[in-house]
Length: 456
Ligand code: GDG
Image (cartoon, rainbow, N blue to C red; front, top):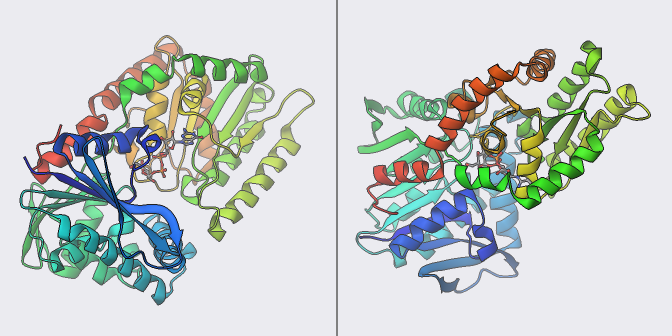
């Protein structure tokens, strides 16, 4: 059996990073094949290191390298996070184009490829992750590697019209065509990619996932990522979860909890969500003093200006809504810009009456699936999910909203808060079944089977 070689921006070289979800899934496959994991060490050094750091843990070889300040800025902070991220999330208005950043992005892809290529052996399969390494297939092919290279995109792939706003769309699409199997989160993302190839690269969609393009036959499919469903359900009943639930319970004093949990990112639709909650209190005055909205939003990418601006905007919005509607004994919006233990989150999900998962665009959105698994079967809460999250394709039995239509979101939230128990249970049972059936192992096995890897 050949080895599986994973390439991702950050590896789980540190055992604490193997705690959840994706990292566990990749780690298990690497362990079972005696594989290798290659990526950035997370450190910055003054010069490009002559050699990567190489070490083995539980039979898995790690090959990690520091980046220079210039590489980190151009490849990671600028091109990956200020060009690809906004464009792939349909925020062309937030993209900052600068040719030197693309050069830095390409150079880091080439450098990581040069660490992988000499270590590959016949029978190995490569699995590249995410938008940091869109060019990796091309560099590995240039080095002479003819074996399988899988690629999984965790974020959306935009419509061809939006993808074409990326100055380097042509180079990127050509490079992506060098992968053997391309995995997308949803059918929509897959069809956007294929439509681009058909319109711009004279590709043919042969059906059953096969595409012929640039004289090659590649596969492109939707592989919606899942969660460790059973383990999350257990986490929601742990001691730590119970303690978190009773702490927030004391604050709520019998009021209904509406919850949001998101990295603080402009793709997550937080300002629109806050507006929608304000509209709930405005148009449904009977909810005033009876409902409390809590948003957990750990800050992320705070070195990037757009993320700092978002923080300022949310601070203002929460203050305004609390000022307008709050009372001596009631805080309408609680916004906590910090992170909590996974089990504490599970406890909060469990006692929430409704969860607002309303991104403007999202590859999948795992919070939606975690919320489902954490519910109490005797009294499940209601998930309100954006139609623009990849998860909406699988979780269509829940309440689906357009997050831009904030008045409608407020109405749907009211419907969720007043939904009879029987309807809540019926909807939840269907959602639960989907999340359990299509969990993280299902996702990994489906992808690796198509790549031709037999990994446990
Ligand atoms: C990308 C794509 C895709 C959140 N706050 C805390 C915390 N979290 C955890 C959640 C969840 C995860 O972070 C967020 O997952 P998402 O799926 O919502 O989003 P991204 O980070 O944007 O991830 C996304 C994903 O990749 C996987 O392919 O679904 O579309 O954008 O697990 O629970 N975890 C802890 N404390 C917090 O305060 N411990």
